Image (cartoon, rainbow, N blue to C red):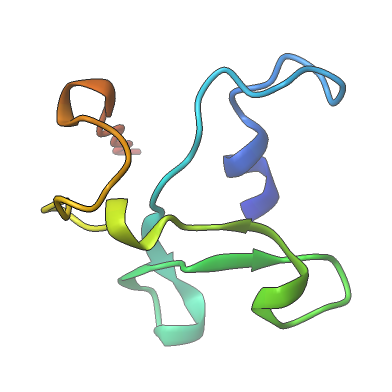
Length: 83
């Protein structure tokens, strides 16, 4: 399911994403549903960061972005979802 988050900016699999996902903060069911940062999404069948489908940009992660982030604050957008 998490792979859907990182590919949601694509119209189809061949198209390049229109935006990059920098940080993912969602309920983590490995932590009893508490809100948590998801640092990477592993390839199917893998469970390590080296074979990740997506990895967060650490300097751009969090509610307060580091000055080391390669993006200007005006170039980033915080997207929220409330069911």
